[in-house]
Amino acid sequence: MTCRRKYGIAILSSFIALSVLFFSAANAEPIPVRLRYLFGFNAKTSGAPLGWVDRILVDDDRSEVYLLDNGNKRIVITDTDGVFLYAFNHADAGIKDTPRDIALDPQKGDIYIAEAKRIVVASYRGMFKRVVDLSNIPDSKKLDIQSIFITSVNLSASAQAGENLIYIGDGGKQRVVVISTDGKFIHEFGKKEGIENNVKSLYVNEKGITFVDPAAFGVFHFSPEGKFQSRFGAVSSLFGGFSMPVGMAVDDKKERILVVDTNRMMVIVFDWNGAPLFEFGGPNMFLWPRSVAVSSKYGRIYVADNTGIIRVFEAIEEPPQPVAEAKPEPAPPPPAPEPPKDEVSKMVEEEQRLLPVFFAVDSWKLKEADKAILNKDTEWLKKNPKVKINVRGYADERGSDAYNLNLSGKRAKAVMDYLIKQGVDHERLKFAGFGRVISTDKSEEAMRRNRRVDFLVVKTIEPAAE
Image (cartoon, rainbow, N blue to C red; front, side, top):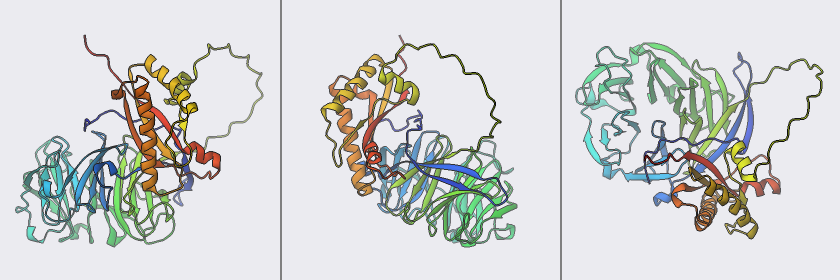
């Protein structure tokens, strides 16, 4: 399996809507948001399900997700659809203490793994390369590294243009330290500039430096030079409030900040200035959520909690449309009849999907009626040899997450095997089970629709050069 796939996966409107949220800041217009639960994954195909995931890192450039699985003392890498790519143990990367954070070299792809006192550099495949020299940092023996961030954005006049810099959130001295990747000290700022206690989930862009301080119940903004700009956050169990914030992520595309609060069991979304926009979660959705990440490229939110399952959501804003004054209009002439299209071609054109098949409870067996539907899909695939297909299995919400992930994978595998048997090239197909679909509709018909395998057209195959 190629680890660095660069093609995107389309997010379809066919996913089930989980709920509709209408939250806003008191001084802002209401923002209607429809939250859609896309899928969950636990990397079981790696040989062991995920344990306690302390950090999620989304690499939009390579369409990959890095999981700091400290419960199993390893780092797991999947694609953005949760399909397992590979994993490596702490020992293979030279890690001696429990990692606090990870970051990626944007050019080389090396993985920087932060312990409390060290930063270990591993190759893309997780083999130990070196330890970053931190001895040039003032009071280096007092370091208590809480977070790191690597960027080539030049925020310091002391750094060379284009040089990668490591930003270190140090809880030992309540400061942010900036060094080069070879350990050269650049500058620091700390308590006298306004840092109070902790520097977690450090994030750096052209605007400056942002982090969350759980003990201060706040998110802090500092300028590129390290001058305090602003903070937001308040202790409250109400909308937008903090009880026990533990992590943060930034959506650069929408200029938003997402904070995960483990005590409220919520993900809270703010604009850049700290106005709460919407939030989602609660004990019916999460069990002590720990980490949040966002893919600005695909518009997805990834959340890790104590279940060992990474849940993936999409929040769709639907601003109210102005109501125009109704004016009577003459009835339009009937449209000219269009040439009829076959059933599969019509669905591909409208939804980028092939015809789905549906399963009985606890079953992955294909019935004759299912095979008849798959034969139609096979006919379309043979007429369109330049496409690849994602075969996606789902289950209804009855049963455990682990059971439904396994069951949905068996359903997807059974369908893919049938297509291959009918003559579809296996290299055009990728299957994955996405587990149970949580829906507000609890009817038997809704449950039946969720016990399905559907197909997503994900990539066009370029013709070989002559």
